[in-house]
View 1 (cartoon, rainbow, N blue to C red):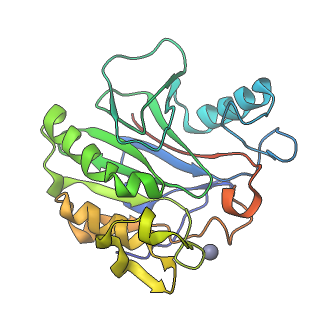
View 2 (cartoon, rainbow, N blue to C red):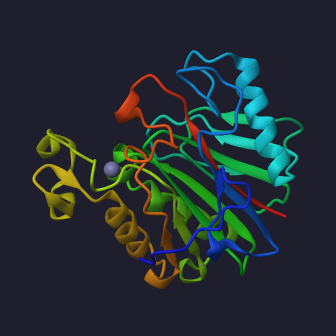
Length: 252
Ligand SMILES: [Zn+2]
């Protein structure tokens, strides 16, 4: 896995240099620079957490403006492994219930995942001009939503996984990913990823799941920023009642 140096165009958005392409726009938007009040302060993008809907809408509008994208399609996120194929351009922002991953080859749409410790894994196929994004909390990792997303891109867009560039967003790091019930929650294949008793390296798990799906190790980039350690990100583990930050990717 590559350690990378971040560009920070406006201070509150991270971009992956590996995704620097005229075909692409993307960003990981931290919790700063929004309008929501505590405990969702300030750039909460999620409805249904108790935040005022008009604040969530305003935060989403700012994200669209900074990416110059017309509409956002977000996953409803149920910690499952269903992949939604965006086949037509929406006329307004769309949140698809029951899905944890999104793929498309249409331009102008920002595919968005909402996070507070979970990973957003973003995928870019520069050959077939297709993208994907997956929400991977520990349940998503157990369900291997990463391989589901890669194989959906292969089936729908003929993506060769060896062409994919993959990034792993800021998320719960091995420093903080304590699973005291791991014997019942995590499969035996994950037990090797324990960095000390009860602490797991889910960044390494995602790296290895991407490789198993056919992505080349040198094409995988992880932010290696822990959301529980870094106060600029919402963290469910740190705060329980909090907002969600956004990772967004789209084709120009
Ligand atoms: Zn940490």
